[in-house]
Length: 220
Image (cartoon, rainbow, N blue to C red; front, top):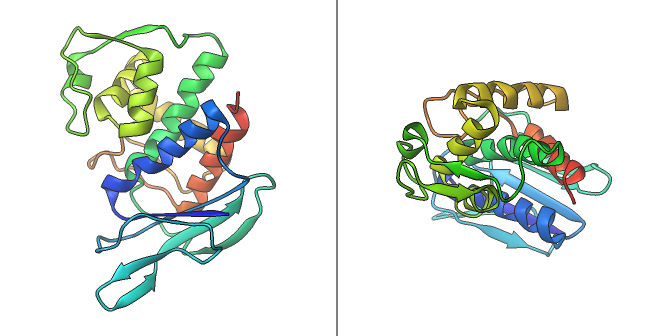
């Protein structure tokens, strides 16, 4: 039993790393949980195998996080939750749906792990976190996926979106459509990075659906 507590936007890419670890190495355990904090605080990343609910460390002691859910990965059963329908900006969790469509493209043979992507001016202009490639530089699809999963690089996220749908805007539309198809009724994507200004919104309940979907459809 593993609970993951993410505190603030900059921590959220840990989930993408865990998806990568499962999908490509099949090393994750049989149950996972995750939580989001709805506002900045002084907590940090919490990994627990004790079965205790995740908490944030505040100056006045530990307090429950504002929005969390724990899901059995095998059955999809919700073990526990609080504020799971609360709307929040998903930040880099946006990239879960990006990866879902990227993996679909591989499965449908629209591209392969050795496909070369060329850094565009739009992708290059994204704010950090960034890979830092120059306009015109090439990168293999597999390496771009790794950069998004492990370091949540925004330039590579946009590059993946452009490679699959031509523009980031069309990729975001496709991600929103996929979310609705999966039953993520409270989710919308205006960009594929999760950066502010796109109007992205979701809930931890919807993110749970996304995670379950990625793992079940792309375990290979």
